[in-house]
Image (cartoon, rainbow, N blue to C red; front, side, top):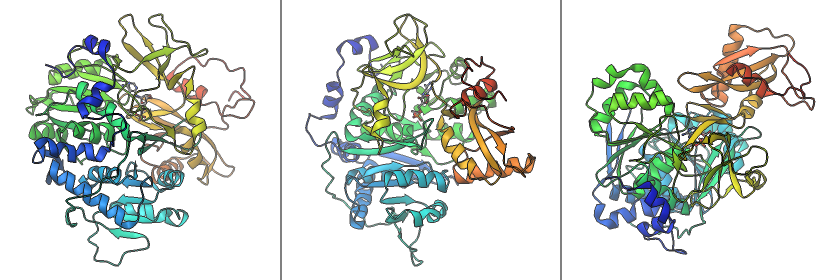
Length: 568
Ligand code: 6R9
């Protein structure tokens, strides 16, 4: 029996009070995500149940119970408070998927500060942009990443503390640095958890747009109401499940469903701090007896490439329920998973801004391979006309995905950028920035993004950020960055570059530019392909027409070019 029961029944009688009641929350109560995920679970008699089973590079395994997690998150919260970090301050997490990342997140919110997770593969520039925007007070990191922090420390007077979790503290600390070893620190049994209420800020997740710098989607503690119930009904998490979310908490999936959702449900989760490799993943599922698995299309397509023979080397009969998010899950991948694992992946659609799943395939619901499914009960979703933003009622007509504001985990603003936040709401709808159609049975079908943002392997990359960084390379006069189709990653970054006089296109220059971006921004942002051009197509007002370059890559109709200035 699935937790959600019948979708149709749930739709009829749904209100968010159902989730509030399950969590024992009443309007006006104190609600703290850290408390709900650890102390509350211990009070339910599960103090000795495993909360986290972690596996590292060398196969080492660490296990923590819910009580360990309660105490260690207290310990981190207490440490931060001792440093002088205040409620409301932003504290960045900049680490690989080590236990300190997971417990650090809960420790930060327990003391009332705002957790700002950033992907540890980010280079110094990507880091600087996001720490500067958030005026971050402290960063928790590892020795292997601290070099990137040191590079930007001088221009970040706001960043008072650099906390290193794997430093033994024997050497004299450098400026603003402090060692903190979670497993060895004096355990804090009791901590005065910050009495946050529904609208107290909790998490700041940066996401990329087409223009301008990355934007910080700001969430509040009340988001728990959505994250808890979607984890329960869509991931179908039950008492005895062993859950694995492959996402990194540097991205929203890794926090909403890699921390908050499963632990608020009191479920044991496993983390594998090792890069992708089919054999390693299958072995992990087999050895850890994973029952519920939340992953992403790029990973599924990569597994598909390895073939069914790779699957058959392992006993994966433990798997009970599979879900996917981040990019379009093509029908072939859904059908392959049925063949390979005896289960279909259930696609779910949502965004950093929505904080939780909004359109999903429910357990027990008929899956139409290639469709994102139907709106979660309590989420009113439509596709609206691209021009007048009125809901489209005719089946199969493509429009923009739009959501009626009001679900608990909706972002509350973009940090420092209320104007852009407001611009996302039109005619009383939140406009996601994606195109889709709805069929006669109410299933949503994804078509594409409605902007120039590149989705590479489920990670959004803003072309503007890459173009700005490219301009800092000595050889680059101007550039345009677009997504190019890729069979596994869906899209990869391609850069069109016009060179400065005196520079000539060459393989070496290609590599030099690629490496420059990889180091400065991240491996995700690094162009996989560079095409040198004499000049870039621009509108009469001087804006680079990425749309045109993108259409060429995708073999699409170029459309209206009447505003073109040149036709190179
Ligand atoms: C959770 C997350 C959001 C964007 C979103 C859309 C794309 C996410 C999808 C999907 C097709 C799905 N996206 N899920 N596209 N099918 N099931 O991924 O958040 O990093 O903010 O990305 O990802 O374009 O707007 P985020």
